[in-house]
Length: 204
Ligand SMILES: Nc1ncnc2c1ncn2[C@@H]1O[C@H](COP(=O)(O)OP(=O)(O)O)[C@@H](O)[C@H]1O
Ligand SMILES: Nc1ccn([C@@H]2O[C@H](COP(=O)(O)O)[C@@H](O)[C@H]2O)c(=O)n1
Image (cartoon, rainbow, N blue to C red; front, top):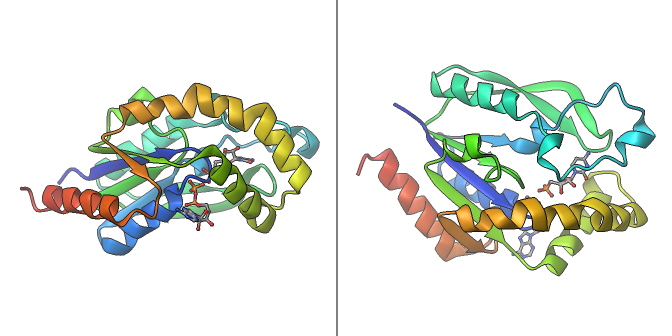
């Protein structure tokens, strides 16, 4: 059976992972998650100080071809070895994680709705919305706690690349979504998307 592919997009810190995890918890045995961030290009050939300054919010930062290949494998029922991204090093780690085919595949990331080739594969397109001030505050806390960043670096990156790219590439994809969520913690939206997944899984 062809898997259901769900795209979950939205700005940084909007609640994409929060919503994705809720779906995974609701369909634990039927769901595989692919984080687009794991497909950021490897930058082992670039010095660390330069890697820190790259634009990670432009579509060209991703190796989308590899993700497309992996999606084809999963659709054929084959497992894939997914790269694992290390935000502290701004490059891929040495690890890979095996993703197994499953009836529901969630593709999560800021730009998953931006690439037409990805978008065309999706059965449900979701955009998680949140005010910019809330997003950057959440991101700042997370990046300090989990991604090895300092506050000045977070502010500089936000103003030079994250914010402008958001308005050029991320926010316009809101209009391409089937469902726009006002927060990743919205229970009603979660029920609506879950019901749609259930109906596709049950063939009704
Ligand atoms: N509606 C919300 N209210 C409060 N905190 C939230 C909300 N949505 C997400 N968060 C928190 O904000 C942080 C970033 O959320 P996350 O889902 O990881 O965002 P994204 O994946 O879009 O970057 C997490 O710590 C999460 O718990
Ligand atoms: N080396 C990197 C790679 C990516 N980022 C930022 O991650 C953001 C996307 O992740 P979310 O969980 O916040 O959606 C994106 O805005 C990139 O700027 C980074 O800081 N460093």
